[in-house]
Length: 86
Picture 1 (tube, rainbow, N blue to C red):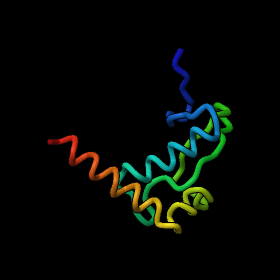
Picture 2: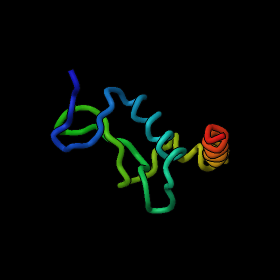
Picture 3: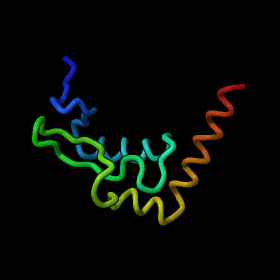
């Protein structure tokens, strides 16, 4: 059975899964300042978690950015895509 949210947003069953998806989105998608997901929240409609581009940046995402780890993860993902094309 596929679960859906009345909001139409992708849902994550657990907070940890939403955090992983938030980080992965920032690695894989062309996001930048004032663009792309920065946090998660628990939905009042479905009770599960969603990503959002509103509000304060999630502490785990902010830590990865400040450490330079997110930039390294983005570069690794870019190289992985390039190598798969071969």
